[in-house]
Image (cartoon, rainbow, N blue to C red; front, side):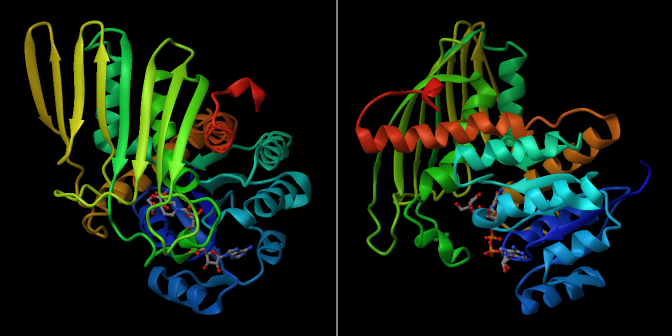
Length: 346
Ligand code: NAD
Ligand code: 89Y
């Protein structure tokens, strides 16, 4: 597979980052784009010089000519679009990257994984937070054994940043922060400490102008024996405003690791202390404070292409992401019923 051709569906708020990132990946070309909204479609087509434009995804798949599809729409369209990708080319299918949240429920998610599995193609969920370079530095430090075996972790995202102006749909859903943002930091907790046996969660809504919960506090019992606290809020007004940083605090048998505001990583072990500046670069098309997320988009898309070329499963494959999505479902169930939920229930 020398030159890899892609198509992108959904030319909205976030897709621009994905289109910029594709431009920076060697040997990849986005040959077609699709959006039901003609204005968004033509704006993206003009900005990125893409001539093949569709308002109907089914037609784009019929005409084909691409190896993978990048699904950058919001969640209600994910299942039909993934299934279209599986039917493409008379059932040969195309490789898929699909934005988070992958699906609206576990049944849909499992059906989507099965549909692509049946074609033998690759399915990756665009679960990019574990690819943020500061988070990645922490993951690699931990996996390298620098603080011994972890027994406690805190994965925290607290902000008062207005995400609703760019993404108005976030104010409208019955679910908000766990499904939209908590999903990322639950995934980080999995990347750090492994799969989860039980979870308990509380949620609340502080902002009266939105429908769903904007604060969630979750307690995870990992299969490895680690306990982690995963907490998120979009109702936290403090200085410095840390959007969109995830802060970490990990205790291990041999020391501690902290990722503090301002992308400062501190490792204390064996009587010593190491401090590292792990701030992400601001890519030429990126802007603060989103540069952290934007770099992770470039890194995860590069990972997808590397996996295609090497014929291996991406770290956040569809199958892997079922376990992150199950945590989201279990957290909502726990908050609704006021009890600890075993992941085996899902
Ligand atoms: P958006 O509403 O701005 O854009 C979605 C676009 O998809 C719209 O232009 C809409 O017309 C189009 N669309 C929807 N269904 C379609 C269909 N069936 N066929 C063709 N076009 C269709 O949404 P957004 O803010 O760009 O978010 C898109 C996704 O990206 C969401 O799932 C969101 O959670 C995710 N997101 C991820 C990150 C991240 O860091 N990974 C950050 C922001 C948003
Ligand atoms: O949609 C969300 C995401 O995935 O990252 C941040 C965000 O844009 C707002 O919470």
